[in-house]
Length: 188
Image (tube, rainbow, N blue to C red; front, side, top):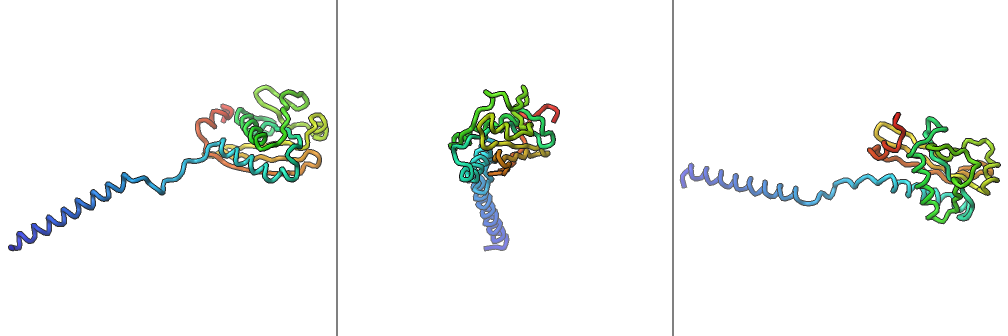
C-alpha cells in the first residue's frame, strides 16, 4: 500500500468517525432533557401550600371549628389600600381554609368591618374585641403583598383576636407575570 493510499485510508476513517460522532450527538439532542427545570408553581398552588401551612400550625391552637374572619390582603406600603390581587388572595386563602375544615365567616354579608367598593374588607378598626364580638370570631386571616421588580411577595397570618397572638404564618413568592400585573393597580 502506497503512502498516499495509507493517508487517504486514515482520512476516510477519521471522516467516518467524525460523521458517526456527529450522528450520535445529534441523536442525543432528541432525547428528553432530564435536567430541565420544572415549571414554576402557579400562584394558586403557592396559596394552597401557604394555607396548608397555616392550617397545620394554627388548627391545634385554635381548633378547626373556631370562627375565623378573612380580610383583604393589602399592599405592604399602603395598609389602607388593596387591589384585585389583594381581594383574590383573600378569596383563594379562604377557599383553601374552608376545604381544610376551618369555620370561616363570610363578612361580606355583615356591615361592621370597613368595606369599601374596589378595596375590600380592611381590618382598620382598633377595637378588635368589638370585631370579635360582632362576628363571634376567634381569629382573623390577614395578609400583605409587595411587588418586587420580577417577584411578588405574599405574607399571610392567622391571628387570635383575643390576645393578637399570631397562630400561624406563611410566606411565599411568585414571579411577576402579566396576570399578576393585571390584578395590581394600574399605577404600579
